[in-house]
Length: 135
Image (cartoon, rainbow, N blue to C red; front, side):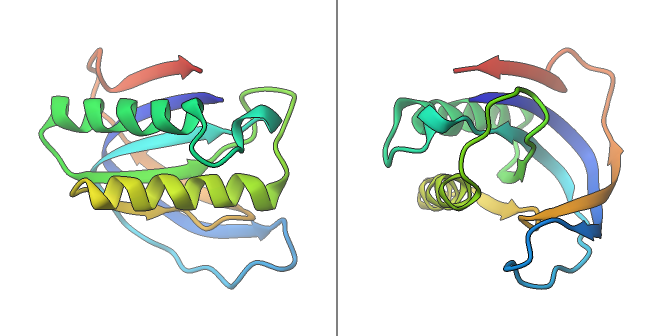
């Protein structure tokens, strides 16, 4: 798994291109003061309870605590590596991560899965505003 974490003052999207035919219709959304995890899931990451899933959760919580916020956005981003997990398994992993984060008291949102999105990002120039992790 590879994750690019951003702290964003604003992270907004509008669905642009549907890439998977069997996903529901998506709506635009606006988010303020959020940790956004751009998550690239690889084939070995998809086992239920895998260590990579736990590391994603721990790192998201750590960064949210640093910014003293509770909003986390999970964004499937298959552009950080060549090997990609099966879409259904990747989506399931993000769902499990969302539930675990919500159980820990975080407000978690996923970007629409199976879409290219028009993104609007506003992020501060701060060392903790962009962090890359590879698990």
